Amino acid sequence: MTRASLALAWRSHHGLVRRRNEDAVSCLPDIGVVLVADGMGGAPAGDVASDTAVHVIGERFARQPPPVDAPDVAQRLTTAAIDEANDAIIRLAAQRQGCAGMGTTLVMGCFGADWLVYAHVGDSRLYRLRAGVLTQLTKDHSLIQEMVDQGSFSSLDEARRSGVNEHILTTALGATPRVEPAVAISKLAAGDRYLFCTDGLSGMLAPRELCAVLDTAGGLDSTADTLVRAANAQGGADNITLALVRVDGLADR
Ligand SMILES: [Mn+2]
Image (cartoon, rainbow, N blue to C red; front, side, top):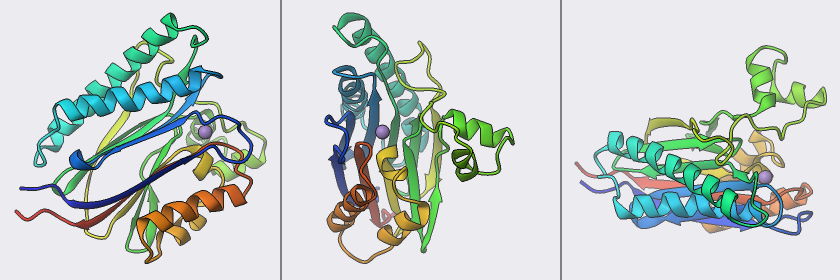
């Protein structure tokens, strides 16, 4: 059995306001792994945290890529690799000048024969476009999302309009000795498009705008460029990072 046939494109742009880019992205097409992180903590800590997350996890997967027919193995590896990244960030925060208190979000995916294992920590997101319908597969680990879940507001939009700060995370890599990532498995369908992104994209473009750009026939590279341009056209208030994966076909059994 082989891996699903995938096309990938990824971008990271500092945006129009921030002078530094604290986001990180790493894609390993050979093993079907995608990693996106949004670091925080100020210079130089934000970059160190996000870079550490994508490198530690990427290396762990590259060392022992899960078999393409074993989503359960991929799931366990995902949890273990995220733990390892969390430990590495906490260690660096204690050792390196200016890195105390740093943290990062993470959204990642591991693609197999006909499945995707995905995980996230914080407010970086995964969306899926299938048959013209855009679905947000992850739910932000943020205070504003928690308030919506508890019924204080009917939607994120309403909470935002009421002035709730949308940048307060309830969990992040590097914030606590144990981190609880949300990990899930999903079946792939040929033609699926997946968008992994930081809030510099999802905060600038509404879902229907993301959907309009994703649901076009053009190549993935031009779609990725269009998304970055569109986020900057909305002000580019934050670093913009995304990875796109298109499922061109499922593995033959
Ligand atoms: Mn951000």
